[in-house]
Length: 141
Ligand SMILES: Nc1ncnc2c1ncn2[C@@H]1O[C@H](COP(=O)(O)OP(=O)(O)O)[C@@H](O)[C@H]1O
Ligand SMILES: [Mg+2]
Image (cartoon, rainbow, N blue to C red; front, side, top):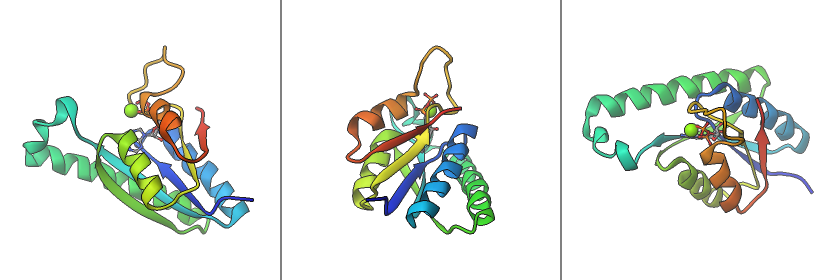
């Protein structure tokens, strides 16, 4: 028993990069593949803003920065990773990706960039925990 394909959703927060490091340990141990996913948050109050080309471009530039940082971490550990960019509600896209790619483990952060101290766990993580078809490892700060 082990893991074959680990999904790591990142949002640019420190704890999400900590999740990348944790997932690399597991990938080495189980000889698993890893896929790193960033979801451009789209929907709700952002929907109109997205019609502005400059807003989309800013998000895409952010995404590439996050991927570059994650790639530096994987490279330093001699691990190759797949990268995926999606658009939509982060939790929905995380679940969709895990199903499409048949991932058998999700490693993610307890919090994100929008951290609000009083909550024990971030809203995206909370939703992924309740909807995921596979185990979820929540890395804490
Ligand atoms: N847009 C996103 N794309 C990919 N993963 C995300 C995204 N937003 C959050 N995550 C994942 O969920 C974790 C917790 O974030 P979240 O639940 O959004 O906390 P918060 O409510 O503090 O922003 C992050 O560390 C990251 O692993
Ligand atoms: Mg968030």
